[in-house]
Image (cartoon, rainbow, N blue to C red; front, side, top):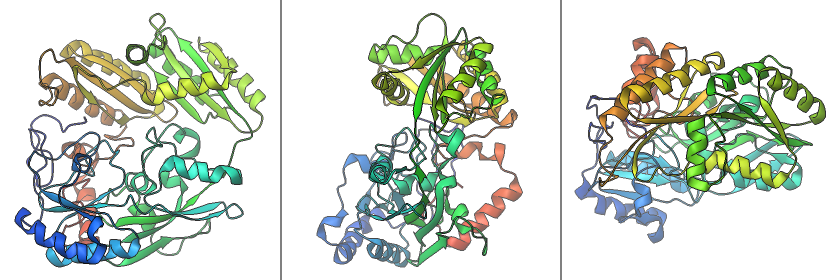
Length: 486
C-alpha cells in the first residue's frame, strides 16, 4: 500500500491518519442509497445496480474504503447508460467514483459513503481497427492485453504495457496515464491516445481530439483529460494509435556487481545508439524477493540485474552495439536465445516479487532523471539502515521510474493493521529525495488519495489554484471522484 506521509491533513476525501477514506463534498446520505438504487434500476435494469457489492468494488489494489462504508455500484452497458447515471447523480448531488478494473495503486477507485461506483467493465467493444490509419477505436472497459491480441492478426500491437496489462482496462490506463515497461521507447499512455469520448458530470457526451495524427484546433482537452483520474469527466471510449508488430524481439540480461554499477550500465545505454524497448533494473533485494517467492535462482552473489528487450529492424546490429556498451560498463552480458526463458524472465519481473505475506509492506512509485538513479538507490539503502527496515526496488530504468518496496516483519500481528511508523517515515524521505533530485512524487501510479499530502512538494500554489479552477469548470458540484488527485 502507498500511504500518505506521517501526520496527513484531514482534508475531505483523503486518507486520514488511520488510512480510512473520509467523506467528500455534497454527499447523498447512506440512508438515501436504497431510493437512489431503485431509481437507477429503472434506468439501467435490475442486474446493473448492486446495493450489496462484492468486496472488490470497495477500493483498488492499495487503498480500501473505511469499514462500514456504504455505496452502490452501477454497471452500465453502453455510453447512453453512463450518461443516464451521471444525470441522476447530478440531480441528486451524489458523488460518482469511476472504476475500470480496480487495479490501481493509489486509491483512485476507492468509494466513500453515499457514492455511486460507476463500473465501466461492460463497455468492452473494440469498435474499429484500421491498419491504414494506424488507429483503433475502443471502449473504456477493454482489457489492455486484449487489445494487442485483437490487433495481432492485423500485424499491429498497442505499445503501452503496464505490468497489470492482463487486468487493467484502457479507460483506467488513460484516466491514470499509465506507464509500464516499454515507456522508454514508446512513451506512456498519453503518447498513444489521439481522441476521447467522455461523459461530463451533467451527462453531456463530449468528443475531444482527432483521428488524424496531427491536429491543433482549440485547446488540447484530450491531453488535459488523460491522467485526470476521473475528476473531470468519465472516459467511455478512445481512439488510440497502434503500431506495426516489430519484425524481431530479443531479450538480454546484464549482471553487475552492485546496484550502483548497474546504474552505470543504464548510463552506457543512454550514450549508445541503441534504444531498447524496455530496460528494467532489479536490485539485489528484488532478486532475493523473487527467489523467495518463486525459487527462480536469480540472486547469485551480491549483484544487480538489467533485463532488456530490443525490438525492430537491425536486431543483430542493435545487439552488437548494446553488448559492447554494457560490457564497457562492466556488465556480464547474456543474450537469451530461448523464447520460453525470455518470457519467464519478463513474467518474473512483472509478478515475481510476491505479496510480502507476514510483513508490513509499502510499495512506492517515484521517478527521477535517469542520471540520478544511483542517488535514489543509495538513498533507499540508507533509509533501510536508518529505519531498520528491509528495502528493495525495481525500476523502469530507461525512464527513471522506481518502484521501491519497504517492509518490516509482522510476527503474530494483524496484516491489516496500520503501517508501522518507520515505513511511513522512510516513504516520506524517499519521496522528498525524488523531488529534490528533479523528479516527481508519482511516476505512473497517480495521486488518488494516497499521495495528496505530497502535492505541495511539486505543485506551486498558483498551479494548484489553476487546477482547482479547471475542476470547477468541468464539475462545479465536485461530484466526480471528489477528494482524489487534486
